[in-house]
Length: 135
Image 1 (cartoon, rainbow, N blue to C red):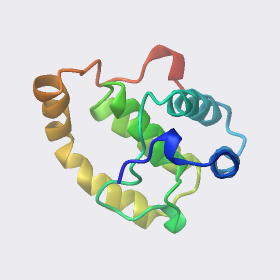
Image 2: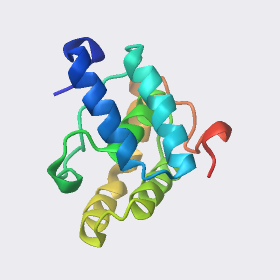
Image 3: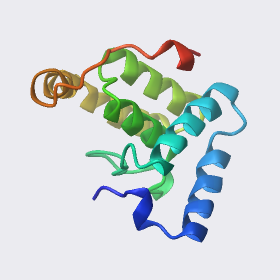
Image 4: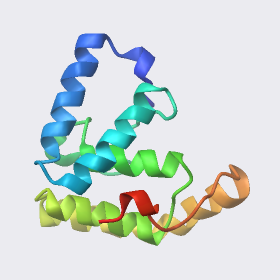
């Protein structure tokens, strides 16, 4: 299920924003990435579908690590560097080792996502994090 900003009522959007921002735990580089992602979400430049193939952190559909990862993928940033960034976000936010391991197992299939973005969607930009998001 993809969620677009126009499907969310204003009060609900405010609650989601505040929850996602709180999840960043005042870690500057994660907040910076989240705020960029949120701006694009609010401007309907991408939709969010939650954690893919795995459970959400603390059973929360609106999870900041998955939100940022989805945003990067939607912009054509797909691959090893993006997955390592995702893992570092989860590590910094104290996600359980079990959840990080569960998600990292799926990363062996990232090449399919790269193939999809390069040859099917034709929107691949890079497998590395853009300069303005570097840690």
